[in-house]
Amino acid sequence: MMSIEHLIRQLETQSTISIPAGWGQGRATFGGLLGSLMLSRLHAVLGDLTNDRVLRSATISFIGAVAPGDVEIKTEIFRSGKSVTQASATLLQDGAVMALLLANFGSSRVSAIDIPATISSPQGKSPEEAMKFAYIPGVMPEFIQQVDLRWAQGALPFSGAKQADFSGWMRWKDTFPVMSVTHLLGLIDSWPPSVLPVLKGPGNASTLSWNIEFLSHDFNKSSEHWWQYQVTTDFAHSGYAHAVAHIWDDEKNLVAISRQVTTVFA
Image (cartoon, rainbow, N blue to C red; front, side, top):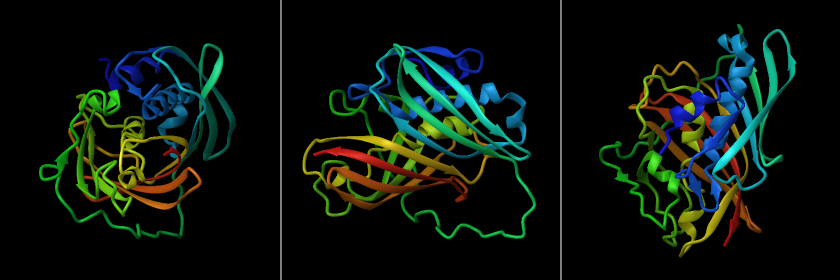
């Protein structure tokens, strides 16, 4: 099975790629992988601009179900000012738009405002103590084989729980020396939708739109380091769920805020 590292590196030098089998999420390709692929291509096109302009926020829309096979990623730079660049990456398969990423890159600047994070990392089980999310063929998405998830707090999916929220630890199973924003973007999306623990039996849910904000970029981490994840459901009604997740590194630094609208078919 081709790893995340191998796939995103391909897009540093080309705009087309063949998505291999083993990255499925139901009938579609894992959305986190698509996000990482689009971001990788966008970084390559921006080139030297990304030396000081880092990804501040991105919005991703999943439009169609991407199947294994060839895809093309087209990019467009809308505006590049003194400190901010706004651009997009569009993923196409068989000529149809299947996913879209809108990204904002910005350089650091001197500011009189400095407000530390107001939310702290969960005080729960360590990665070694938490329950390993083992892959069960035919029950779990194929891409789960690529990630190491450890369930620390909250009920499991389809357990009929009263509370929808949970937390845990995550990392890629693949081994590589430098953990970048591109790697972390896909990893964050590997968790199940926040409302699945409330369901009493198997049911389908998929991400409609995803907004992610990065607060930190100089991780100084490899693929072996753990990242902590906690998700809270703000509202769910009429087949749509709205959730926010916070992500910390293994030193309790808040590094990202993820917001998703999920379509629930149950």
